[in-house]
Length: 236
Image (cartoon, rainbow, N blue to C red; front, side, top):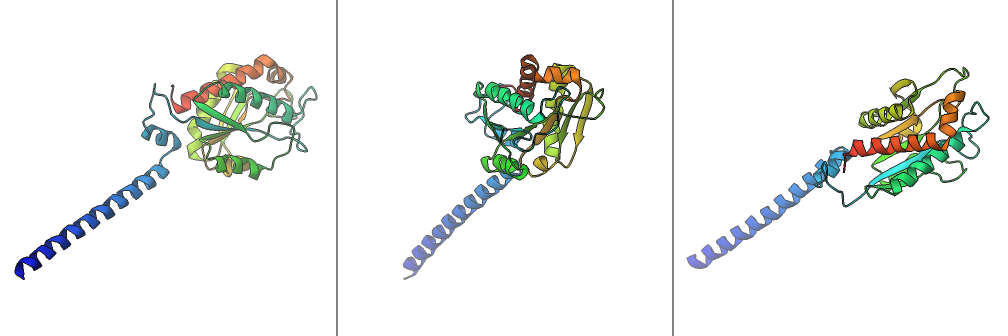
């Protein structure tokens, strides 16, 4: 009887030990998942083994948002062109450029002259789990001499993205540097990923509008944004 009891006790101890190991592994996995969710998006990719000079097995999701559209034309340029049209033209060039790079998977909140609510624009990016969102606009002011490039962000996780893309745009266009600014813009406030709103120049300024409406100017703008994204995520 003593030997039987000893054997049962040993078996019970082994079973309890196995259960504790299983529970410990489950808790460790849960903590890893929570830690991953709290990481910045760039760090999450880095944690998956992506670093400088390395290729990702999954492209970065880039939501491109051409501002305004449809019943909301935006500002009128000095030559009578509407902001919604130049926004869409630049967005399309950026989309085509990123589409050629396997590092990126671009989408657009609108692909034609349609109106999309600001809430819906952010929701598209959030539901898709985009890595970043780029909202494209053109600046305007009643004084046609006002000019320059501005970039906006809302939350701290968008500041680095704004700084990088802003510098690329200023270098590419040569317009006055009006700086990176923090603003509570709705499309940025509702986005759950790093998001920026770019104003490459003033469409009410004849000289800047001419560049922003030209094929060469839009190509330079699109390339500057693409280069900024590559720098932001790390050169591949």
